[in-house]
Length: 70
Image (cartoon, rainbow, N blue to C red; front, side, top):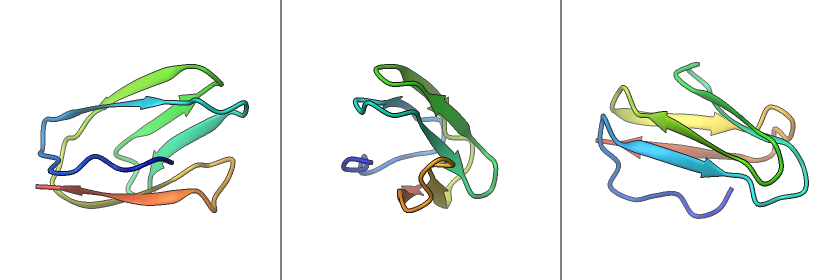
């Protein structure tokens, strides 16, 4: 994952873009979102809750991050 957006708020939309040659996901630990991204494709989510939302790639669990949503 690249740099995460700053100052996220409940209701904001995030567009995930896979610029890699491999399939990836952006999957929230709390199951609030799960975006499956083929190479060169994009997917959109809308943040439905505030707080820290950890996420991983289901195919590459070492790829991880946390969205901070106000």
